Length: 86
Image 1 (cartoon, rainbow, N blue to C red):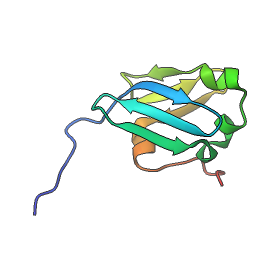
Image 2 (tube, rainbow, N blue to C red):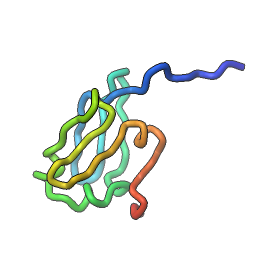
Image 3 (cartoon, one colour):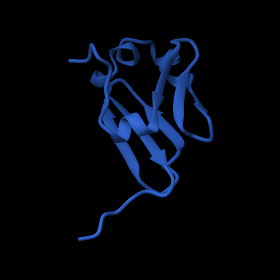
């Protein structure tokens, strides 16, 4: 049996966030979507604050300056959510 391993971690290239979901486009062509309920700080933020994001690293994660919130691509791929998420 062979096992697939990633040589490099996928990087974020774009993001769409609305009142219900977070959708991250990756450099390998995939799109990752998770419920915003996983991230209460983002869910409870204003539309303007959610829209004010930037990629950090080479696309290793997303940062929201006004919210002091960071989410890594690796964490999203692993299914991680904020500890206090419902």
